[in-house]
Image 1 (cartoon, rainbow, N blue to C red):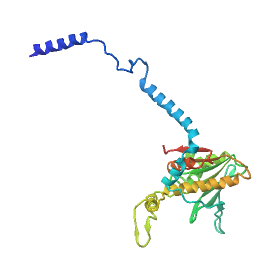
Image 2 (spheres, rainbow, N blue to C red):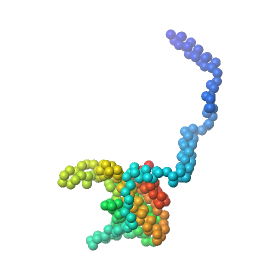
Image 3 (cartoon, one colour):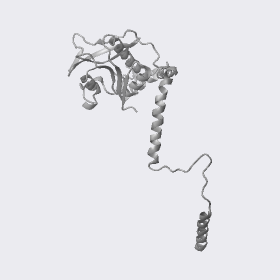
Image 4 (cartoon, helix red, strand yellow):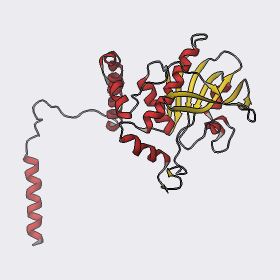
Length: 267
C-alpha cells in the first residue's frame, strides 16, 4: 500500500514538471508589485476617498442632502426668530457663576422652538471674541464639567474652558442625559427607560427625534452668534464629544454658517 502511494506521488510530481507555464486571463497581467501590498491598498483607498471628497464639493449645492437629513432627524420645525440669550439671574441667585482667566461664565437660556428653550452656560470673554463656538458635552456631562466647575471631566478634556481661555465666546447647552429620574408620569407610573429613550419613543410617533431637537438647540445658538456678528465678526464653530460629537457633526452638515467643526469620541 505504501509503495502504491509513493508511486502516485512521484507521478504527480513528474506531471507538474511537464505542465506548461500558466497563461494569464485575458485583460490581466502577472502581479509583480513588491513591498507591503496591504499598506499599498489602504493608501490607494485613502487617495480615492480624498479625491472623491474634493470632487463632491462642486456637486453639493444641487443636492437635496441637507433637506433629507433634516427630515431623517426631525429637525424640520421653524426656529424662533430673533434669538436672544437671557442670563438666568434672580434676586437670590446671581447669573454669574464663575470667573476664569480672561472670561466670565453665566447661567443662560435661549429660545429654540415654540415651547422649547435651551439652557446652559455662556462663556463671555473680557475682550472681543476671536471665535464664537457652541461646545457640546457628552449626554452625561454637564456644562459645568466642561467649565471645570464640577468634577467628572479631566482638565485636559475641559474643552469649553480651554477655548474660553483662548479668547472664544461659547454657549454650552445642557443635553438630555441617560438617567431615568423623570421617565414617566409622577403619581401614576414611572419607568426605567433612560431620558433619551423616553423622549425618542414619543418623538418618533410624530416624525421627530431627540437628535433633531438637540440639533435645533445648537442651530438656535448659531442664530444668536450670527446676530452678534453684526457688531463684531468672528468665525462660528461647533465642537463636541460623544453624543455632543454626533450633534456637532449633524449641525455642521445642516448649516453652512458653521465654518469649523471638531468631532471627538463619536467616530
